[in-house]
Length: 233
Ligand SMILES: C[S@@+](CC[C@H](N)C(=O)[O-])C[C@H]1O[C@@H](n2cnc3c(N)ncnc32)[C@H](O)[C@@H]1O
Image (cartoon, rainbow, N blue to C red):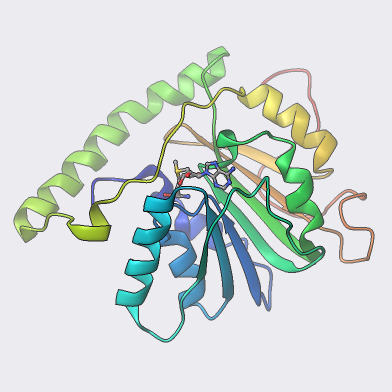
C-alpha cells in the first residue's frame, strides 16, 4: 500500500482508548483497516460507511483476517442512522468528519458511554500562516515516506489486488482549523485539539464519567484546549 496519512496515525489514536474499552464505533470506516485493528484488540466494533464498494471490501478483508474477531460493517450514512445513546466506549472518525456536517459530533457525543472517548483525525484547508507552515513542513517528510514505502513494495514485489485495491471515497475539507476549534468548543466542551503533520489534526473528547454526558468540561486528552483562543495556533 502507498504511504497512507490516516493509517500512519493508527497507533496514536489507539493510545486514546479508555481503560477497559469494550465497544467502539468507527465512523466512515472506508475499507475497514482501523476497525479491524480495534477488533483485533478484543473490542466489539461497529463500523459504518455509505460507500457500498468500501463496505464490500471491508467485509471481504475482515473475512480474510479470520482471527475470530471481525467488526460489524454497516452500509450506512451515520447522519441518517439512529445510534444507541450512551453506548460506545470509543468512537473514531478518521478523515471522515469533513464529509458530513460538523454538528454530527453532537450525535456521536450522545452515543458515548460515560467516560467514553471520541477521537477525530481531521483534515482542514490551509487558511492561516500557521496552517501553511505545517503544510510546508509535511512536504519533504511526505516525499521521503512515500519513496520509502514504494521502494519496500518494489523489493517485496507486492501490488494491492482485489479488495485491497479499493480506495475509500475522498473529499476536500472545507472547514478551517480555526473554525473547527471554535465549533468543537461549543459542541464538545473540554475537547483537546492539536495539529499533526500530513494535513491532519487530532481532536479528543472524553465524555464525563457521570450521567450528564457532554455538558461538563472533560479532563485529559492531547494538546491544547479547543476553547476559542485569540490566535490560531
Ligand atoms: C477519506 S475516507 C477515510 C476512510 C477511512 N476512515 C480511512 O482511514 O482510510 C472518508 C470516508 O468517509 C465516508 N463517509 C462519507 N460520508 C459519510 C457519512 N455521512 N457517514 C459515514 N461515513 C461517511 C466515505 O464513504 C469514506 O469512506
